[in-house]
Image 1 (cartoon, each protein chain N blue to C red):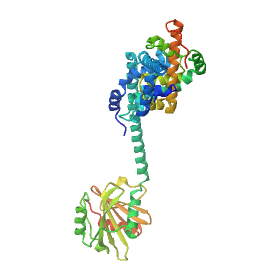
Image 2: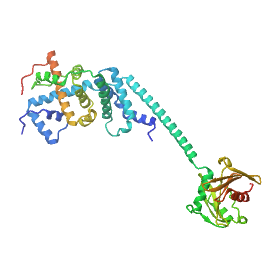
Image 3: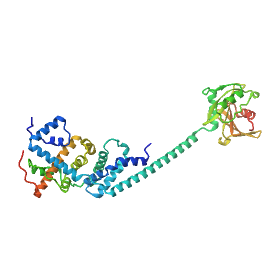
Image 4: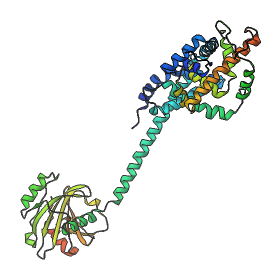
Length: 188
Length: 255
């Protein structure tokens, strides 16, 4: 006999709804569209509610919700639209490799503005965006992110490392163009 | 001893807290003495921090939470509707199954014929063996037969009582008692709460002393039914109808 819907709803609201902002933010970052983000968040919570019996209490509910969200995103929004919104990875890495990392620049690196970070993040390949969102923003463990993205933990690690370097290089590239970061010294 | 090569992935592992104690100490020692790797760490810390700060969750707009609440409301109503429909379908199914079972249950004359056959071949035993009608009547009372039984002495007709048992005749308790005739022929009587209206209509009808009798031939035996108040009685024997009906006339009594 399944749980009465009113009790299930109450339990669900207590457990899952505290992560509404995290889910909606991730949806917004992935879809980059207010309307799609609202729909994706709504669908995520609806599916989570339907499958709530499968959620194991005591495990990370945010990771569980983000797993559902990413699965819907990949199957519906990404596959359906198939719009290449990001620069291909090879091209990006090639371009950024041409701009060497600043080494021993002395002092702290510049404090990037939110807009600069958002722009650099937006240019990351989609799989890399998701991994940065899950691990560096939503603070999932590598293992939780691996489940959410259906990839091995080793892939999470290597993609995350590359994504951070790409972000750093993109930000520095931008700063150099804007003229507030000096030319790097040759190194290595 | 300091490592001479520069670190790369190890720095990220260090930032993410994924190094073991010894490895962490080794990388930290190197970073303390290597400006290039220390700068690389600073760079990654800067990116990680800036990413978290720029992309961290903002409170979802109220219309998003309202949309989710509305979607959950709709889902709950749909679930309730589905459950109600499932329950209704299950009830309907049970009712149909009940009707089918009822339709498949043997008619009362067949059930009585079957009980007679099982008593005759010994597959159903008597629970009380006695030639004493009063003893058997007390036995039925003690066993909770919900009406007063009347076990008649048919000695005048050459039949002597040998015993009885509580039987279930198409699901209702029945007082069953057995006589043996002069030629060793068995005669089984059953009494149960019922009406003659439950019987199949295609019967031979007899009337005696203001009592109506219905006679059937089923399963190689004769069944003669009559009504005494709230109780239906049936006599069963493998003798032909014409021989069993007079026995029923002798046993039947107006309430």
